Every structure is written in C-alpha cells, then in structure tokens.
Length: 223
Length: 405
Image (cartoon, rainbow over all chains, first blue to last red; front, side, top):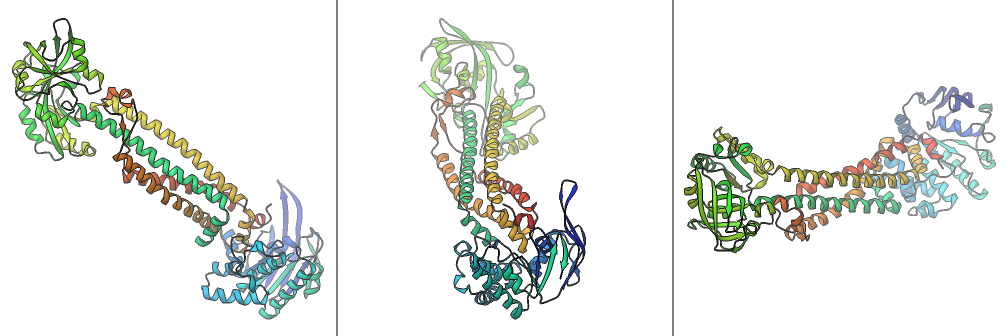
C-alpha cells in the first residue's frame, strides 16, 4: 500500500546541509496494518510521517501510495491527495476552533463533497464509536484534551481514508485517556479496516501496535 | 467556504468589528465627501452661469481675441434661425457690448455698456433678480440705464441722475448720448458690478447703429450636462465665420480653479484611502498571522491554497458587503437630503465672488452613478487589502504552518 525506496531528507540552513533527517529509508506498509514509527526524540519519526503524508517533500527517493508516486506531485495535488486518501491526527489536536465537534468531524467529508445526510449519519456513527456523541454541538475549546483528541481521530476516520497518520497522538493525554484512545484506534483498525501508522515513543502506543519500526539518527534500525 | 468564513467572522470579533467599522465609515465619508465636492462645484458653476455668462455663446471668429467692431455678428437673425432648430436649447438672446466712457457731473469711468433684450434676458441671466434699487429694463425703457452698484458708487450718482456716454458705434463713428439711471443691481461679482451697465437694445441699437448686429449670442440649455453634445450640434449647422464655445472655454479660470480643487480633493481622498487600506490590511494580516496554525491544519487536512484564498475573500466579502450595504443608503440619504436642503457656509460667496458666486449655500450632489463608483472603490480596496495576507499565509508549507508558534 505504501512503499518508500531510498528516501532521503535533509534540513537546510542557508546553503549548507545541516541535518541528514532521513537516511535511505526503504519501507513497505501493507493495507490494514496498525504500525508504529518509534525512536528517541529527533530520530526522524515525525519527518518520516510527514513525508509519507505528503505534508513535506523529500530530497531523493520515491514514495508510492497504492503504486502512485507522490513525491513528484505539486503542492495542490498533494493537498488533494491528503484530502482524498489520508487522515491525520496531530499531537495538539489541531481542530478548527470555529466549528462545532459535529462540523469538525464532518469537515473533510464536506470538502470531499459528500451529501449532508451521508455526512450526518457517518459523523454520528463515528462519534458513537469514539464515545463523544453527547459533545457533537460543543466547540472544541470546551472539551478536555482527551475528548479533543477523540474528535481529531473521528475527523481523520470519518471520510474512510486509506491511511491514518497519527503523530504523537497521546503526548498531551494522561494515561487513562491514552489507553482509551489507543483502544478506540485499535477498534477502528479492526472494525473499519483502516491502516494506521503512528509516530510516537509513548509506551501505551508501543503496547497497542502490531508492528514497530524503530528509527535512530534518521535511519531504520529495527522492524 | 462561505459558512466557514461566516463562523470565522463571528469567532474573531475584534478584527471583524474593526474591518466593519473602517469600511462603514470610509464608504460613508467617501460618498458624502465626493457629493460635497461635486455639489460645491455644481453650485459654483450654476451660480456663475446664472449671473451673466451663458452655457454656450456664439461669436464671430476673432471677437474673443481682438474684440471691437470688426468682429461683430452682422446677421443675428440668420444665427438665431439656426439655433431655433437645435434641440436642447431652452433660450437664447443676443447682446451688443461696447466699452466707453460714462460720466456724471463730477466723475467719469470706463465701463462695459451693453444693449440687451430685457424680456429674453430674464430667462438667461440673473440681471433681473439682482435688482437692488429702481427698476429693471423693459423693451420701451428708452435711455434708462441699469448699472452695477459699485459702478454707481464710482460715478457718485443716484436714481434719476443723468449719465453721459461717449463711445464708438458699430460703424466706428462717434457715439454719444445722455442716459438716465433707472436701476441698480448687485450680483456679488465685484468686477462685474463695478464695470457693467445695461440698456434696452431697442434704444441702444439706434445709438450704436447695431440693428441685427451683436457682440455675441448667449444660450441657455435644458440640461447643462449635455453642453458638449448641444455645442457640437450647433457647430454642425453654424456658418464657418462663427464659433460656438461652451462655458468651459468661457470661464477657463473657474474651470481651472475647480480642477485644482478637485485634484486636491482627490489627493486628500487618495491619502485617506491609503490609510484605510493599510489599516484594514494590517488588521487582516494580524488576524491571519495569529491563525497560521489553524491554516496549517486546514492545509494539512485537505484545503488547497485556492480554497484558503476563497475563504479569506469570503470573509472580507461578507464584512465589506455588510458595511457597505449599511453605509450606502445612509450616505446616499445624506447626499440626497443636503441636495434639497443645502447647508450654509457663511462667507463662501465672498471667497468665490470673482467667479460670480452669489450664494453662501452649498448643496451636496446626489448622483447614483457617483455613489456607485464610490462604493465600488471601497469594495476594491477591501479586496486588495486581503491580497498580502493571503500571499503570506499561502507561502507556508502545511507542515511549517502546523507547527507555527
């Protein structure tokens, strides 16, 4: 489903190459996987996740999503790819503050042009699964961190993307909320068949996933 | 996008209120200011043309440059026949003007003495309505002289006194007569009031040997805005020995004064707009830059740069449309009300008396076309002011924007 070949990424300051963030990454992630990019801070987890999610470009190598090369796409093509094929869960939730929980969850579906009825049904279905159905009319800033992260997961999963990329989703949550979130994501993976890739060094995430890809200094050291 | 824009407007109230208030007041002020500027020019022009100068005047070529008897219209009737066929002309009359020496018992002074058709002149100028003492002229008023109050002062004469005239008749022969002061007028234009005196043409033509002759023919129009079109029509039919000129040529100095006034007016407006533009833009920029992460999220989850642009345009569209929809009827009403009830600026006629302004009243011009373009300019400014913030926000990569602090 996702294939990376010889992916390299540098971070620059001025003309000189500063950091070799990703070193010859070769990786395949199959459909339905529940995997984790793991490693110490600064090892390249988020950079790799951003590259896979077409949020950031790479300097060399190729990334394929369902045999379609995504590294050569333009900025707008990558945006549309994210809209149609991917879901994102961010460490700091990144919900749209002016939209209610219901509108946040249905936002991507709305952008993709789904009918209002379809959106409503799906939003309620996902909200029930993530136990936030009683918060649908609330604004994000009235929710706890755990609830906001569940809304973010609901938003990512509602439009049934091919893959969900979750960057440190439990970083701002306490243990209880972290466990609950991971249980819910595993349920989503099992019940909805969504491919989920985490970038995290949180023990609750490590305990939950079925595959761990370890990185260090920008390279894969264990899979 | 529209509903998201609306929610953003309600959520970010500070920026929304500032943009709304600035747009509202700039639209209102612009409409009123332009109406005032156009109104004062219109009033100046109306006043000036009301006193003596016609909207259009017909001369024999050379008269305006050289003057004198060699350039008189020799066949007034033929020119009037042409004018009777041109549409848009409400009235016309011929004038015979000459310069001569007027003397009283103790004083004498050079003056412009003109033979006019008193009844026709009533419809064309304010000579009749600016009567101060005595009486206005009639077709049969004989040697009655109707003179400006300042000229009368110079000659030190009073109603009923005799004033002698010495000048040159139309055939360049010597012309002299005794007139009787029957009436005085005051237009407010000092130059005019201190040098001009009038007699009925029926009497003056005999003295000056000027039957069917005229210095020029002055014309009043149904609609002053059509002056150029009517003038072109007159020129088309007029014999080539004559020229037909509009008030714009006849009152060059006033036109220039109005143009200078307009230029300064528009410079003020431009400066005002620059300030408004930057204030709206800065507020827009502050708002956008405080929402970089939000835009980063939107980009990350699938909003293209085009959609972001549309979102911000929608926000400014909603704000500016609301403000303009509110400001336009208020501004238009103010312009309309003061077009009917001009406000009075004491002393304005004194300032502009050289242009024949005889009133302290300044009406506002009410013109829907002008109001429309005023509003369009404000609209445009609002849309231009959001371009830089859009470029700023769209220059971020989604991943940069998402992590922006």
